[in-house]
Length: 115
Length: 112
Image (cartoon, rainbow over all chains, first blue to last red; front, side, top):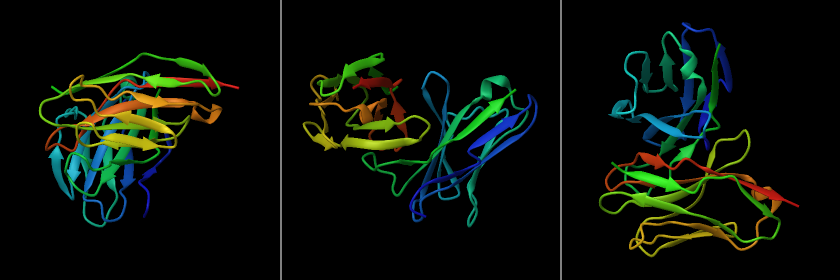
């Protein structure tokens, strides 16, 4: 498609439950990124993929967070055993190439509320 | 590591006022610089970008010039509108790296 599509738009989970978010990048884009935006507007980089391969995972809290981008499937971000502090908007983004000046296109985000 | 510093908001202006939102950065090498805008309840949209020193990015009346000597990329608009009310994020992408590093965002409120 012509835009980054994220689902669901809103998700409510009880503490300790699993949350799974999905992202379809723009068609033809090889790079996918996940960012977490917490209440004070800060964007925290989580992970990026080049096609189905992890490109940079320096921002991932590895204990409970995992992500995949498999061929012919939406990318996913999964949080096992959610905590209150995981409440945030999770943005997926995609880009056609890896060079520094290329534009990264963002989806509208998935709002996760952990209660 | 790379970082971006933006002026704290909110910035409150009347319609048709001049806007400046300051942004400075720290990075090794030659990063690319971006301004993104987030309207209420929406995702990030690219507003403008500059990929090398002295480049000026412009879009929708907004401008920003990549100043390597002052490591700055200040956003300006000559006459703001109510519809410009949003949160503005300055960001950089380091040399050889695609990952964006964001500032903390500046909320702009424009009143009629």
